[in-house]
Amino acid sequence: MKKLILSLTVFAASLTAIAQQFVIIDGQVDKGDGVVVQEQQAFLADDIESIRYEKDPEFILMADAIADDQKIQLFSQALQLTGLADSLSAYYDYDYDGRDFINLDGRYYVNTHSQYVEMLRRRYLRFTAFVETDEVLAAHGITTLDDLKAYAKTVYDEVYPEDAGITDPTDRCHSLNRFVAYHLLPFADYGRMLTAFPNFFNQNLADVADWYPTLMPHASLKVSNPRTANEPSSSLGYFLNRRGLQEGPDKYGVQVPGIKIDLMGSYDTRNGVVFYIDDILTYDKKTQTETLQERWRVDFVTLSTDFLNAQTRHKMASSYDIPESPSSAAIGFVSEYTQGISWNDDANLFIAPIRSYYWCYGGDEVYMTSENNRYDVSIDLPSLPEGDWELRLGTCLMPSAPVVRFSLDNEVICDNVSLATSSSGSAEEGWLPGPAEYRYANVNLDISSFWTENNSTPMSSVNNLSRRIIGRFHSDGKTDHQLRITSISAEGYAVLDLDYLEFCPVSIADHPTIPED
Image 1 (cartoon, rainbow, N blue to C red):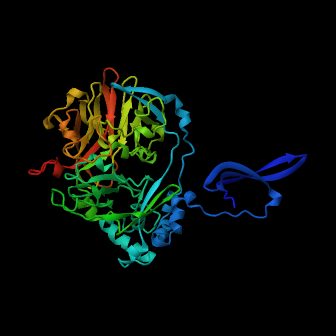
Image 2 (image 1 turned 180 degrees about the horizontal axis):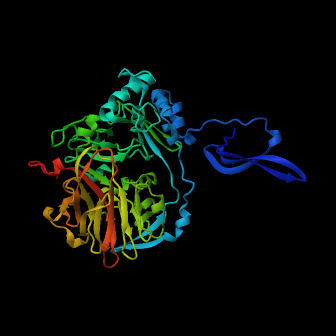
Image 3 (image 1 turned 180 degrees about the vertical axis):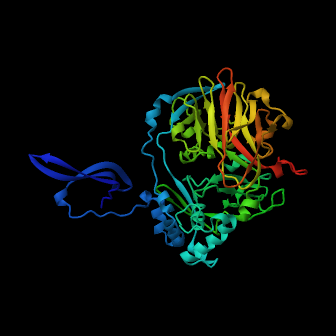
């Protein structure tokens, strides 16, 4: 029997002077033997007694998929009660069409090599859910929705006592709302790559990790992918809010086991991915005062959910359909349609995909060009727990780069900084070398190879791969912060390279005996 998918459209047509109603089926038709074709079929409405449909998992949105999942019914009930299920109903931005910005397509020159740019065609809205099964919750004595409410109140009233009196679960400051929202990320990677490629790291020095926004206001989530000691190809799995190094503590003596993600039990929905986890996830006091009080190295590609939802992070240059230059392509974005980052109209922002020859963290890079060398970029910073932090910019210094000013929350904190190749200096001058645990790739390096002493050159050994100290600031854990970068002057065709940001607790940056790298 033919399987018809997608939309039904009814329209009126005149046939031999008699108006007749037809139903048009527009979708995929299974012809059998693995052959599926896209076609339209017309049926007389009078000949149709009823229309039945079956749910196809490929087209179910996340909230509905969670509601259908019998393993996570308590979380589903909480999702509905808090109103956050409505947030998971988004899928596609119908106001955006990449063809409207086709005039930005073309060839852009960056130093000695060129990039062919394809504008983002469609803007998808996607989500990731990390969910405890009912069995996991039951192991903690949580078997009803009231039990879950009580548990969430115990956790979050301690951290946010000022909100203890809120009774409306749809209020974003309500304890149950916070509990559910912290399990949800506003992006998805269908490839299950939850961190950067591990190959680029010296994993005897640091676990592979990333820090992401959640739907809970002012709360970030760490995802890490630690490896077995001296076995870089042997992963211990993906974890949430884990701290340490491989199977032990980090060099500061801190070890937090974290919560393991069940990759095998994960499944796709129309607008995201659902993962089971093996313990209860909260943004509790320990998470804020211990687990996340470490240096964060945040790839610029993770600073906007639009970059992540466009699947740019793990995209290889060879996968771009640009025949003129398949190994040197990039994808362009529009400021108006990019969450978390905005820039001036006469500048362009692109993401270069991973390629064999790279001078950047993660193998990819965010960079900007402007015909008049004018840049004015505002970046929403990740939500940090309470504490004093040092902010840094990781960048590839180029022969032609602008002189810039850094402002934090509209106050200038670092001025007249040249990002040209000759600018890298000492820590006293505001500069640090690149990361010791991350490698620079020469042109002949196999991108799939793991770090070894023979095939890897640390970024710290390459003069123009530097970190600029921007300044220090205090986070109260409840306030948004924004970094602004504006160009002061530039010569030639200046490129603004935005590779990564670092957020380092001042206690670590100023540690008297243990150096960072």
